[in-house]
Length: 469
Ligand code: BG6
Image (cartoon, rainbow, N blue to C red; front, side):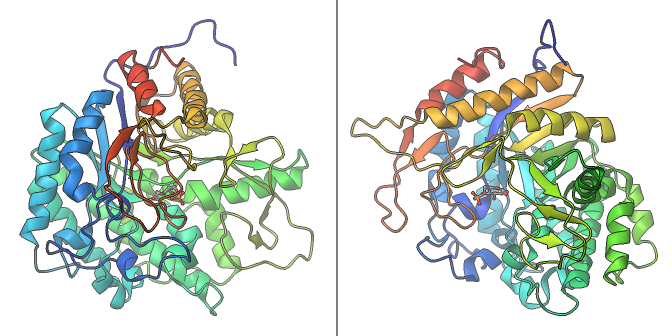
């Protein structure tokens, strides 16, 4: 649809950027923090662990000051569960509680609204040892953790996000949840864990509304439209299948408290229906209502219907796996790729925003979007990253078109505010507006430098999204 005039970004639009605790903070096993699953796993070959990361734990004042210089209205960060509750439940680490209190105050000093992710891939290792999300007691532990956060920070934090990318944890359960996806019954196990996370989310949303009536809370999955590889009706069915499994399962549950029917029948066919749905669970899910939808967007996916008789392949279901009779990922020839092989699809961003809004009619905030690249720090302290500016510009343009299509947008937080350690490709895969001077294994001085994208984003924010040059 062409627009003669674009609708402006709302006046109170929350421009900002994101990070997550284990990827940015460092101090991973000090100052009273317990280990999380991220601290006990072996990092992929050639990448550093998370002990120091970008050391935001010791640089938060400087980082927040730089965010303020860019004009941030919000900063999305996550709270490390094991920093507050070193064993995941029970004993509280006061020093950890104080750290986030100070970080929140530092943000508010500059009128930056904290946007807090409650859980971002870093389950306390102590809970993992007791079965992790397979154990229903983890749901109670999450409620305990939520209550502690609401009590400690609810007087200052207005915006809460429940679980980061629960859908990616489920789709890539081998890599992120550490599940042996080739074991018999793996799919049932994965979707039982998924059910517990959905339950934990619903309980946290209800508790938030009960304890903090003024606050707003929402889910934070990774949502991206799935395209059919061709206009063959079979491929359209495959795209609908994978859209349901990748996207709608999570939002249908968060918003309406119902299991998506396509996913349900797929699980049924494989004898993998979750058996841990107890009396009262579904009523609870239906009672929990998000105030907005947050989602991360990097790129769309494309699938075809697998050939008849094709065997399913195990592995990462997001990229590459074939789900027999359901969908098969293919690469889309219409896109350029990042240096790390991720497809770039800004128009898909508009399409995804429109689809999510038409389905759920809730305001949307983007909690991640960005480009990972090898950046170079020049001798004069500059970092020239035109590729990142181009990526973000194109996505912001499409977001403006989506607003003009009637999508209600609350904010935009690209990944990431400062350079941090990628999930599995190290610090050399940089996303930040702020360069952190360290290499994979040489920590150097961890000094902060403003990239070209820093100055560009500052202009974007100052002009409320009108100056994208
Ligand atoms: C999102 C995660 O999936 O993508 C982040 O929420 C992650 O934690 C980001 O860092 C980018 O992915 P990667 O693998 O490049 O770090």
